Structures are given as structure tokens and as C-alpha cells.
Length: 204
Ligand SMILES: N[C@@H](CCC(=O)N[C@@H](CS)C(=O)NCC(=O)O)C(=O)O
Image (cartoon, rainbow, N blue to C red; front, side):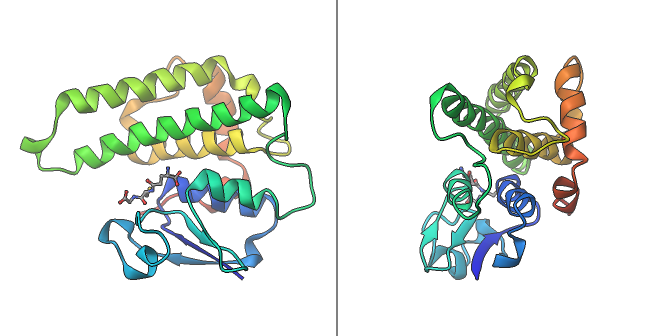
């Protein structure tokens, strides 16, 4: 049995959970919920960075971060890989995952900054990261054809984008990421309706 260290609201953990459900591998994993910001010993003994997701494999190997774990999970099934092995498609998959993770990283920075006392918050820092999420979403609007169809077999770029959009709905709904991005809105909403996305929707 593998152990996934995570939290029910982490979008990075959600990527792994969605992938496991999509691949029918949930039964091979137990999940330990924790708060990584409090540096719990059960996590820091495995990952000195105290970040989630962290995965302990059945062989006792410890893996992080989410992209490493997703790459590992992609070796655990006999179906078509969720990232093509080579060619232009391979590099596009990796870059689209970097794009959706970058959107997430910038969004998380803003959310964490917003939790600081009002007089300690840095407006320029918030604006800089808002510009990253906005520009990243604009790029996705131009590249929706690089994502797997929302109603067919899924892949890692689509999972990453789905979890990023779900996080924006959850923590930054005021961004209205759908506005002026009709292609991304249609594709994203159809993707968010997938059973694996519904089953992992973040809740306080
Ligand atoms: N690049 C990492 C990001 C993971 C990450 O930042 N997770 C957050 C939770 S959403 C975390 O563990 N934060 C705790 C901390 O940074 O101390 C990944 O893809 O796994």
C-alpha cells in the first residue's frame, strides 16, 4: 500500500488524487491528511521541505513533488501513458504542465500574501503574481487544443489545468477566469464536471 501525504484543499495533491481515480488505482493508496505549514514530523521525516503532495511507494521510496509523483503513477498502469514518451507531443505535455503549475504557484502566492496582516501585504507583489495568472490563462485560452477532450481519456496536461482552474474557483473566484476566455471556459467547465474532479473538489 502506498501512502499519500496531502490535504483535501491542496491543488497539487488534487492532481495526484485525480490521476489515481482516473486510472482506477485509489485502492492501492492510503491518504494521510496534514497541514504542511506546521511542519508535522510525520511529513518532515519523509520530505524535509514539508510540502505536499509527498508519496511513499510500496517499496518505501519517498517521492515529491507533484510532477515527480504523477510521472511515477504513470508507470503503475498498463494503459496508454498520460504523457507521450517522445516527440513534440512529449515536450508540449511537459510545458503545458509547467504552465498550469506556474498559474497555480502564482495564485498560491497571492492567497498566502492575502493571509498576512493587511499592513504587511505587498501590493506590487500581489499585482506581479496576478499578472502571471492572467497571462498564463490567456495562453491556455490559445492552446485549449493541446488538452485532451474533457469527455474522453484524460492526460496530465488536462489534469493540471483542471486542478488550476478548480483552485481559482475555490480561492480566487473574484478573478473570474472565464471572462473573455470562452474556449477555456467551455473546456474547463466540462472538465470540472468529470467524476474524478467532482470527487476531489476542495472544501473547507
Ligand atoms: N511544486 C510543488 C508545490 C507543492 C506545494 O507548494 N504544496 C503546498 C500545499 S498546496 C505546501 O505543501 N505548502 C507548504 C509549504 O510550502 O510550506 C508540487 O508541485 O508538489
